[in-house]
Image (cartoon, rainbow, N blue to C red; front, top):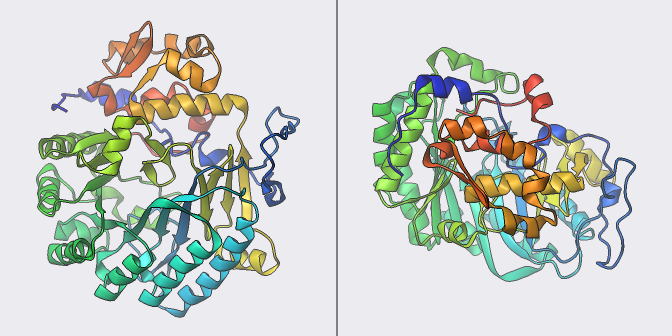
Length: 470
C-alpha cells in the first residue's frame, strides 16, 4: 500500500465515534433480558420459535465448529493504557481458585453444545494469561480437552506479557497444546513505557520472543499500540524497526482507545496524547513500514507474513472479525469462559458477569454466569454479513453476497448504497453496477464505510458510546 496523503479537512470530517465491529450489533446492545436457560441446543430439523419482536428464540445451532476463548483476568501490575477487564493482584493463590470455577463453567456449558461440534480454535486472553503458574497452564489445557472434543487441527494461542514469561511457562504452553503466541510489546520507547507504566526493555522482549521461537511456536504475533502518550513519528518508527528486527509472523497494531469514562486512570495522561492528525500519521507510517517489509495488510490493524494462516485466510475469503479482532475461521461458534467473557453462537451473543464475586456465586449456585445477551434478528444477520465483508474483504460482490444472505443485496441496501456518494467523492469507496470496493484511502477509514450499513448507529452516536475512528 503506497503512502496516501490525507487532508486535515478529510480527517476532521471522518474522525467521529464509531464501533470497531468485532460484533454486530455492538456489545452496547446487549441487555439483561436474556436467559442462560435458553442455551440448550436443538436438533437441526426443529423449527426455532419466534419471539414477539420477530427474532428467534435463543437456542444454539447444531454441530458448528467451536472457537473457545478463556478470559484470565489477573495482572500483577496495572498498565494505564489498558481498557480490558482485569484484576490487579500479587496473590498467586487467586489463579488456582479461578481455575476451579472455570472448570465448573466448562462442564456446565458443554451440556449446551450440540454433539458433533469440535474445537478448531482456542485463545487465552486477559488480564495476563501467563499470570498462571506453569502447572496451572497445563491444568487448563487438560480441562479444555477433557470438556470439549478437538478437531484434528487446532489453532491455539495465548496472550503473553514478556515480563513474566519464564522458560517453564513457555514449555507449559507447548505441553498444553498451544502453538501460537501473542506478545504484548505495545511500544519499545522507554519514555512511552514509563507514561503507561509498562516497563519492558527491548532485551526482555527479544528474550521472550526467542524462547517462544525455540519452543516451536508456529506463529508469533506482536501487539503494538499507536496513539499512546508521548509517541511521535520518530519514536514509533524506531519501535516498528525494533519489532521488525525480531521478525514476528503477525502484527496487531491497535489504535489506542481513550475511554476515561470507563477507565478513569487514563485521565492521568490526557494532556500527552497525540492528536488525531498525529495518530493518522502513525497509522500511515505503520502501513508503509510493514508492507515495505513484506507483510500483508490484513485490514484495519492486522498484518501478517504472506505464508501465515491469517494472510492465507484473507486470500481464501475466510477471514472474520470477533472480540479478539481478526480471526482465521469464518462460521464458527465462539464460546467465552471466565468473568466478562463474551460468546457468539448460533446468532446469539451472551456475556458473563464482570464482577468476580458474582461470577463465582452464580457458578456456586449451579447457574451459568450469564448476565446479558442479545438475539440477532434476521435483519441483524443480513447487516452483519455486509459489515463483515467490508471489514474483512474490503469489497462486496452483490450477486455473491445475495446468495449468502438469501436476499437481493443491491435492492435490500439500495438506500445505503445511494448514501455512499460523499464517500465516493472523497475517494473512500468505488461503486460499480455489480459491487462496492473500499479504496486504498478507504482502508484508513474502513469503519466509516461499514457504519453506513449499521441500522443502530445514529442512536448509538448520540449516546456517545464509542471511541473515535482515528
